[in-house]
Length: 261
Figure 1 (cartoon, rainbow, N blue to C red):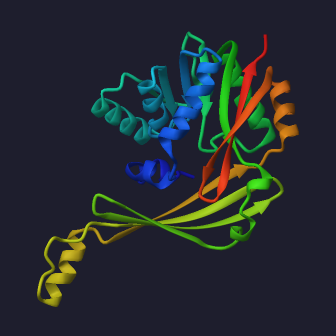
Figure 2: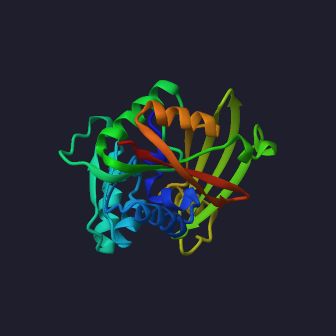
Figure 3: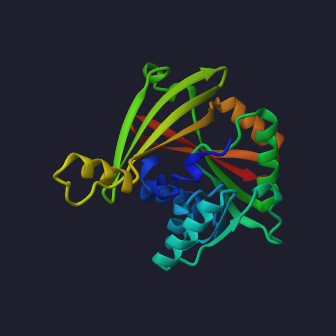
């Protein structure tokens, strides 16, 4: 399935995510500095916002993402902001950069949800890091689920440059994975002047594109502290710390793993 969030909705992605990008990047920056990291790669960088923020904070940052639209957008924004960050389009599983990094990040719950794929992901991250390099990723805890919202439609709206985006989300939980079905409605800009007669008004709507609808599905894995330690140890890492950030009534959790000597 091709996800609209990483294709047609790319221009709105940073708005729709509703993250405090600067605070999050500063928290990540603090962890990188603590471990004396200079170079960092973002695995599944999306539109490159974290890469651009980390480059602004003084790191040598690189992003890789499988979505061509994401990477085109990331390069465009980096050029506009004067950022020197590097971006590559492709799967990080196929990445062989000929160098190792001090750190890797994987954010917005982008790590896989299946046990075997989690091990594969951690193994790839391990190969990209120098000894004692760190991996930072965000994850979901059972204790942070807003249970009263599960199975109920959650409606949110945003405005950007005269356009309006609405999202209706319904989440379902099976075992330790939540599947979220999301419907996005993109309302085009209204004409500057509304025609006086009815026929002209309807033609004006057609010329401006009307409303576009997209259906997206995402999956999020819940972890216990014991599970994270087990996955880390089995993949050549040790779990060093956690930190949290508030997000819409609950906390987003982040794990910091270190590549063992």
